Image 1 (tube, rainbow, N blue to C red):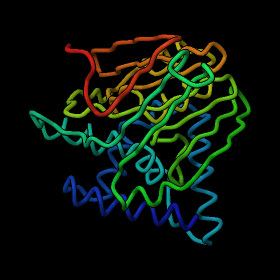
Image 2: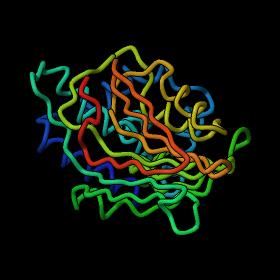
Image 3: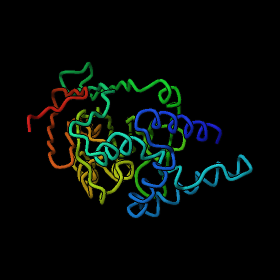
Length: 256
């Protein structure tokens, strides 16, 4: 509970410095944009986190607007704010580097996947949670996360169906659809309910809002196949192999 309150303060400070918006802006706008497309399953989970924090601390310290804002902070600050300001060349910050390899490119022929975050210290030092989640429906999930998150955000996922996922952000991306479903909802749905690379991709694409545009590296431990899914608002490309590697480091791979 204390870590969630602490993270809210760190996010509020960082986003005020980088966007000029106070925390009420992120609370109100994320609630207005995203609540309607959050399934009951995840809304109840978010409300449970809020209740847990307030019960533990003995007073009303946080509400549903705070926890939605925290879970959507990457897409709100890096994609929605520049879109709102009509920035011609927005620059979501370049952080991550990642690699996925399989087949003859690895020692035992199985998938190797690795990822660096390179996030700001004020957030990175708080990225200290490993969640082992067994939902009532869908796959068991192991992921790293920030306190109060129902997704990873980092991203690093493993599910009980053998799907493993990471990503690197595409910089200088400007598309955003205010009617779409939040990225944090779609990525949680994808890892919870997918048993194949194709299922994961289709769930991510459903009602895409363009937020948190990434080169996603996806692996299926059942088959040894890996894929790179370049995922923008409109332009999307998928590559796959059972003998090779894919990398990402904040650049768009395809010319279009």
